[in-house]
Image (tube, rainbow, N blue to C red; front, side):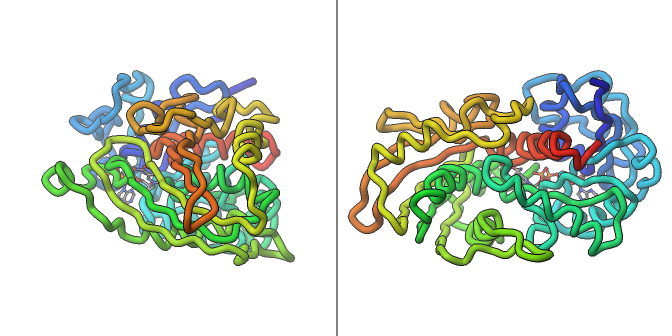
Length: 357
Ligand SMILES: NC(=O)c1ccc[n+]([C@@H]2O[C@H](COP(=O)([O-])OP(=O)(O)OC[C@H]3O[C@@H](n4cnc5c(N)ncnc54)[C@H](OP(=O)(O)O)[C@@H]3O)[C@@H](O)[C@H]2O)c1
């Protein structure tokens, strides 16, 4: 198969660099175009990231030579790319993603700018691939021909939503209290200053609790008529904290279901859970999306974040609670499954389903 040509909007940041690393030997996709802010535009990529290439693997030689484009070079992007990944922050994403889509370029986004739009699918392939059906409606609504926007959710949800969804299908999620301990790489670069974070926990991440409480409603919602209708049958209360860990968001979850499952049922469902990414054998799919660790002190970010290329969710410490039915701990790699790896998996699904060609 001839590789598809892809662009990365904001390819110089924390998430953009992760895209470059993960796409280096990708069997379907090849990076040919990178854009970023005015401070990087016009430079060779190697110069633009000089002194701030954060990854342990070397910058690929072909990428080092790419000239970073300005955001408004959309015609150039259209000429050389089959689609783009967007690693833009929320404000520039609001300004630019629609312009790329309008020009006929599919945009696979990490940003929060369009997550609330009722005609924009917010996809976790193992949960709601059926929401891709909204794309032709989005294109009709906005008079776009070949372009569209598909987004992935906030990085912290990944550590608990798939395990909850696997159980929700049979036992119906009723309410959950979730406390996240989120890695510093989740704040981008330079992020939270070392002075503020070493020897410390910061009990506030702007906008994160609202995202954790809203986004599961949309992901577990349904397409009704011409829009995605949120599922308002359950409640989530979130506390989000920044902790001095480099990579890997950990979440403790206390949960009630409409029908109380047994511990054995939960473990069996998690063990056997598979989604469309596994069915289609997508190149970035984890072999087993949910991995349960029996040890009483796992999962831990340092030990478990890289399991299955950083694409699986690790859970542990499942036990009954004396307020909620069950408690457990979830972990996922925030810049892989929660960001670039999740975006790549979404793009693979979009290709497989024929939305990108
Ligand atoms: N970090 C994570 O774990 C994570 C996880 C999930 C989602 N996300 C989301 O991914 C996005 C990127 O996050 P990040 O961690 O990569 O941030 P980051 O390290 O701060 O990088 C920001 C990127 O945006 C570019 N940029 C800044 N202002 C711009 C503008 N006005 N126009 C065009 N480009 C602009 C920067 O280009 P220059 O280098 O030229 O300044 C850089 O490439 C955000 O929406 C974030 O919420 C992050």
